[in-house]
Length: 370
Image (cartoon, rainbow, N blue to C red; front, side, top):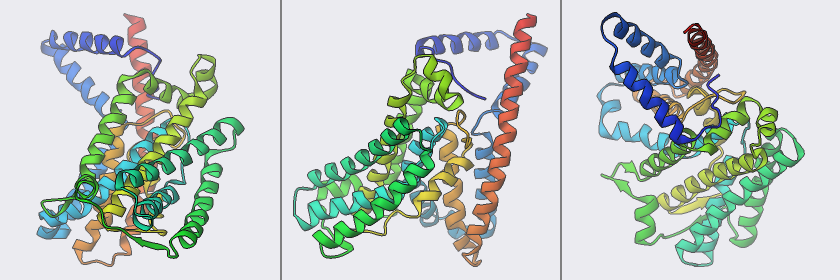
């Protein structure tokens, strides 16, 4: 299991620099062995299977989808979907690395969208207030999820599923009570539109930029901070992590708040992009985010995964979701392909996990022999 220990980022950088220097000084047979070892380590990484899956589906639909799939419009169709999904799936992936689930992201998205619609559409408040209120709804819902899971030890699957249904009812009832409709139109100001609803070159959503920012922040947290080490440790063994002094409760609450924030951000983006809020928004994200995360190499049991892998997972999902339309086939086949991909991804994840464990064991035995 690629579980991290709680070490300082500086120590990690020093160790990696030392290893790089040793590799650089190797020549001849030693260098060849080192290169083979490097390739082996590459295929033991959590994103290895996800990368192969993304390349495979891209080549497949490039062949059967033709030039339309490869055109700027075709690329934008799946890249836009991947971007919105990634904003939610990356925080969900970090949460799953810690061993928890969040099935409430769909209703959080809808609740945040309706909040923005009511505050800035129905009530006419400035859009920065409406956006702040929408994001606050997402963070608050995540906080409640995390608090209940951490304090009661009820499985997060049950807690977040209950939140999913509760928020659906609250959003639907609140929209009808306050706005008198389940659909609320808005007219965003130029700054808000540029930040959340702009189409780059008339095709690519600004959500792509937001997805890159989210990926960079979460990757930095997971790879370069003590908090990231804590996330992997909790996913590996929660009780051992708690015994080691890791604040398990605070970390989990923070992770649930991050998934709520991601869902709320997508709710804001969709509301501004489509000039309106719908109570039915976001329900497809409930399982799509989990599918993308699992295809991206994150184990359902926690303790293993990466942001890069989740990105590949979202790209794979989006390519399949949109690519089937360019083949001329019945769109119903997309669900079949996604189902098969999910099963294959779980099997491949287990294989790469065993490779990682065997690689770690071999390195430990070699170091003892030395």
